[in-house]
Image (cartoon, rainbow, N blue to C red; front, side):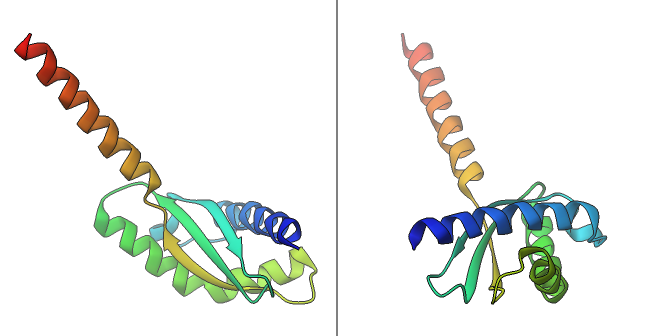
Amino acid sequence: MKHRNNRIGDLVRAELNDLLLRHVHDPRIRLVNVTSVEVTQDLGKAAVKVSVLGSEEERLGALEGLRHAKGFLRSELAHRLRTRTTPELVFELDRGAEHSQRISDLLESLHDGHDESS
């Protein structure tokens, strides 16, 4: 059953990226990329993680734009997926890239500090 949910999550991710790129014209969400989708066992909810370029204010604006468009997105998904139920979309910021960059910066500063002390 988990394998099926993973396949549906991947399909939802691909379809949402296509919808956001081609059919949603809200300027707040032009730099949004869906990074992953986790679907509950009963397909009732989908946690949609998104990556957004820009400042923290732009990220929060993009999240608000996605929440505003979720009815449209869900109805379009219903047409595209053709499953018995279409999951409710819950949008969350994916901060993985930010954390990776911060760790990289910290490691680089440690390395630079080590070179100066040598």
